Image (cartoon, rainbow, N blue to C red; front, side, top):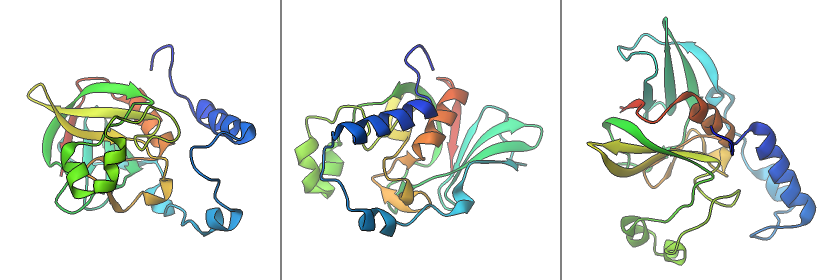
Length: 194
């Protein structure tokens, strides 16, 4: 991931540093509120699985209905990740490629997102990368024909949303899982979204 790469240790240490310093963008949730948050279903944990699809090794396959992303390894196996997907009708389908990658990316809502959800206008100037950013630890930008589709495979600061239709069209993984996928998938990686 380069000299400034994200690691699990960095994620944990960064979060602990923010907590220890008292830095927070929002009021700290009470312990009861944290305990009340649902945990991701264990079936959405990253794991190696059998994979018999026609895609070649190094391909990413996103199954939006089942809420899984597969990184095809070949030899009949793949790494399977649980995902959160775009709300009904807002997820891209078909082939794409990873055209760009970013660690701790900034985020700016699109005009369509702000039209659908006016409260997002407060972020029209963008949100810098970091633990508070909805794109999480890393993002893989999906392109078609050399053009940015405005859809991303990205991390999330809301891991309990994995397995649900929750975003404005992008595909979200836990921060740990996007860091793992980021390390495996170079720019140019083919992506098939079904």
